[in-house]
Length: 537
Image (cartoon, rainbow, N blue to C red; front, side, top):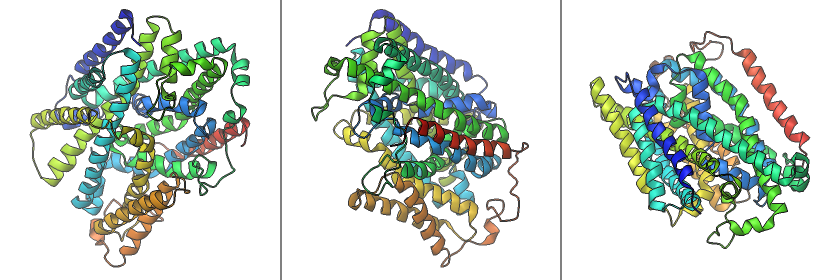
């Protein structure tokens, strides 16, 4: 498959435009805070949209429709994942993000040093850097395979095109370039999804015909038939509770997400950004799941389409490529280029935030905290840019060496995250809600939680991996807190970092957010209602 000259002109103009935007946004950068937090000048809406763009990655754009349309046991049950998002936002808005914002930190792991010591900070930061860099290399590999197939360019050029352009605009523009390029990318990506839905529905004969053609079992969006301890992963209870802990960890303890929330003008804007995410994420996910229904209905009407898909090594069609192959087949010249821009956008919005956050943790946690290195403002700025280039280059290089194992890792990437999401969240919760636990207790709890989840993966396959987020959290919290009775932290080290019952924690909020919390709670109930209307399985 190959693109037309006009399509390539559109793609090239977009990529060059990203570089031009980064040069424009880099004006006025003076120090690391300007580079990593955009000088705290960014409003809530751009940050919220940027966060959603990162989460709507190429894997989501291609994988979610494939899950809805083709995967065994798939369908709209994927939407059960989204019930937990507004609920997780309530806790994050009440405790974690306002606390980080008031501490004036750049790296989220800076909180752990203030509460537990530099050892705990470095342990969590190093874990983040290692896992994120490697998983990003795998992501670049997977995306580049798609780009290679859809555009006709070689795999090497696909990797370089994606990696080099992202590194250039990210290293120049910093967090501002990440945020505003993500906003543009989100608009382009969502437009591409809507356009694909419209064309697919038209070919299928309208909305009524599309839904009547699609499998009724796959439209049912809630599954109460399992508790998640019988080998069934995607049922209501594990997806509700597992996703709740997963999203609290992802939004509240992962540098790629938290760094953006720390770039706001004030703590109320941070909460506003989280609130927007809690409201808009469900419609976004619903849209690309709807795309899965449209593609699935089209394939039922045109079964020969499957023969156009490349085959996996196991001999099965690669359904993840159903959407881009459909676009190339039915979109006119020029519009194909716009869709490919959306594909690049999804990939770049994930990569840019990752390499910027890796740069931030290396500078703040490794260089400045652990090695006690000092920099002038100009030195810190240019070193930060150099670290972004380093991590971007490393992630790009990784993409050339993961081909032999990428199939299993891509399938297992969510499982790998669930091994540590709960335990990492437990460390932050122990810091905020307990007085007794010290750094050694916290690390012991972290290790215990991850090891137990590894044992469950190996010896208890009937337990849904979504439950690992809950089990890991509870195990880490319990082990660390129990250990604190042997060795507890001096109270003199707890000033301003622990929530006390009956004593209001000053989080610097000027607005009363109570109504927003009730709204998000009610919104979660509304989502459940919408899913139940689609059918209970």
